[in-house]
Image 1 (cartoon, helix red, strand yellow):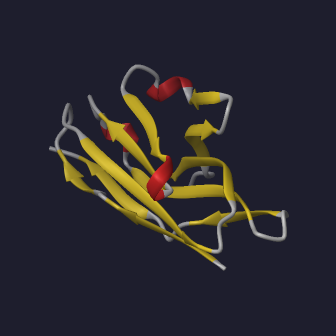
Image 2 (image 1 turned 120 degrees about the vertical axis):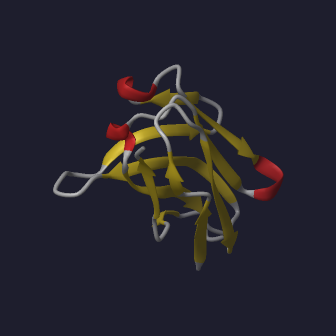
Length: 120
């Protein structure tokens, strides 16, 4: 079993910054990808940013040049540095990971979510 534990959400003023963290632990052979999704009230959950092992990173157009996703491979932890935050970035942010277990099968996991509120 694998757990994804997120941290770093909170309330920030427009133009401010936050850093989210997501640590994966448990029965992990390797990680294919880790990323962040967000879901605003009444809306669907959308991809924000993802890092794919050996292939790089992808971002939603709405966050390009403002958000940066990085990964600490030694700690199985992914970070989302968010800058120039806007009220429309307000949402619950969820960590997602595709993890290879020791049986060499791939499994998808979600974190519990962390709330980000951008408001003055």
